[in-house]
Each structure stands twice: as structure tokens, then as C-alpha cells.
Image (cartoon, rainbow, N blue to C red; front, side, top):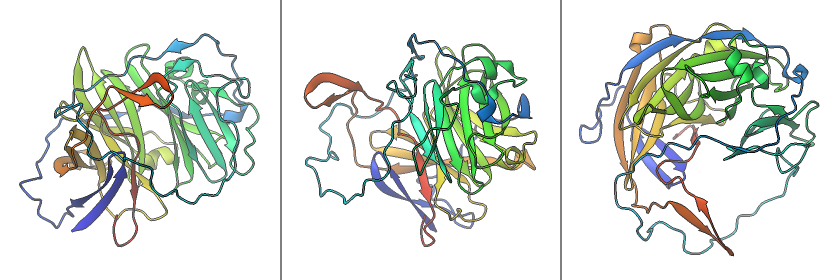
Length: 371
């Protein structure tokens, strides 16, 4: 029996994850039979170096993003939270490193023009990339200097792409990732302002975020909200909340990492949508040690205010029919309270909350004697 320790927004919990040789506990393990679909990327090619894409003057008028799809959460709500930290603990010793302005707030002649800004960023071998709706920039991680010609609009990686909507739409919900094992960047955002809906994906050909990219567009029949991307040895995994007129369920997909790293035609294997599978997070590899050979990717979602669900996704791009998506294993956690808003000190202005889901990322690390 392997044991997987997850550290997330709810704290630390330990889940026993069965190997193929282990018989699952029937009290906690069920087998999902979601619909599996396999589809090729609509288009793919290799781009010119991103540094050579002209900077497009963006409109200064702020626009609101599409409203996020809320997911009903079962269980008690608005209770006194038993797991809240009542008082500050011992301060951790820290050393101040490099500080420099990021994308936004008027720096570098740029200000975010969309709300919410969906801020995210990641550190690579020598660079830091930050993406704030709807522009991103590349920085030197040792000096903080911004790369020449940045910030650029979020659709800049797909300039001149044969799937023109990736090149012309700049719809946001961006994700930037760094594949630590392959030393490649992954940039992605969706196209939802026209149909059919797309996820535009770009994988760098080197560890230089300003260089060229293998570009792909994957198509979806219904609105693919709230995309979350992770890096795993056998695939890039991505999840969505799928909406039609109502919430249809969570969708879990695997992109063929091997083909995308080589700039070749790639496919996706998807399971779902599953109506009881909302806002799932795929396991994202941290550290230099890969998971055990053949390990499935893990997916966790918030089921109630007292439990999480753990699923396993095995993708087989050679024989897609051998791919499996199984679960859930129910993980009990201390009951917590949900809230629509979060108060702040010294102001009556409250923050909007997302109490119906776990927060990105689902970080995974293999320590050798445990995961």
C-alpha cells in the first residue's frame, strides 16, 4: 500500500492509494463508468519565436469576465468553523529574495483590463512567467528584468496560427505551467466568445519562454469553464466544469505530452462530463522525483463540507481503449464552514469567496518513502 500525502487549502490529510496489486476497500472505492472520448487536436504547428511577435496596443477599457459557474455544495453551511486558526502561530524564518514589479498596476505600461484578473505565474530554469488577464510577461528570475517586447497579449503565442480564433480571441482564464522534467513551458487559455469552444495550448520547444512553441487547439462541444492544467509524466492533464444551459459536470482530459513535446500531432482522451464531479483538480508534479512507474494521475474534488473524493486517471495514447478513470475513494476531513464572502481587517469591503471548490494547485511530490 502506498500512501499519498496531500497539502492543500483544507490542510493536510493522508489518503491510502491502492497499487494495482492492492484490492480496493469496497466501503470506500467505487468504479466510475464515465463516457470516454478521444479526439485529435483541431490544428497544430510550430510558431515563430514569441519574442518576435509584435506587441499589440490593447484597449484600455476594462471588461468583466464571464461570471464563474457556481456549483451547489451539499452539507452544513455558515457554521462556526472548527478548523479555523484562532490566533497567529510562530512566525516562520524567511529570507527576502528578489523583489520586482509584476504585470499590472501600471507597471511596464500595462494595467489589467479584465476582472477577475486570474493572476498566475510559474518559475522556470532561468525565467519567471506571469499571466494576468489578459496579458503576460517573461522576467529574468535572477535580475527581475522584463524581457524585451513584453508584456504581450494573451493570444500572442498563437499569432499566425491556422486556428485563427486562438490568434484573434483573447478570452482569458489563462494557465502558465513549467514542465520541470522536460524543461518546457506550457501556455493555455480558452476561446469561449464563439463556438465551437476551444482550448488553445502552446508548449515551448526549449526552456526559453520567449522562443518558439508547438501550438494546438482542442475542441469542446459545451462551455469548458474553469480550466486547470497539471504536469504528469504520461500526459498534461486538464479539467473543466462543463456547462450547457445548466451545469453538466466535471470533465477530465489528458493531452499527449510525448507528442506535444516533439511538436507532433496530438490527441486528447477525456472522461465525462460527470454530474457529481465538480471543480476537480489534477495532481501536478513538484520536485525532481517522478511518481512510481505507471502511476495514474490523481484527481481530487470537494464533495461535501466533510469529505473529498479521490479519483485515478490512467491515459493510454497507444491504445486509448485501455485508458481508465476510476473512483471515488472518499476521504473524510474535519467539517468546515462555507461562506459567500470573506471579511477583511479595517474595511467593510468583503472578498468574494469560492467555497464550492478546492483551490488550484493539487501539488504532488514523491519523497521516496512516501508521496
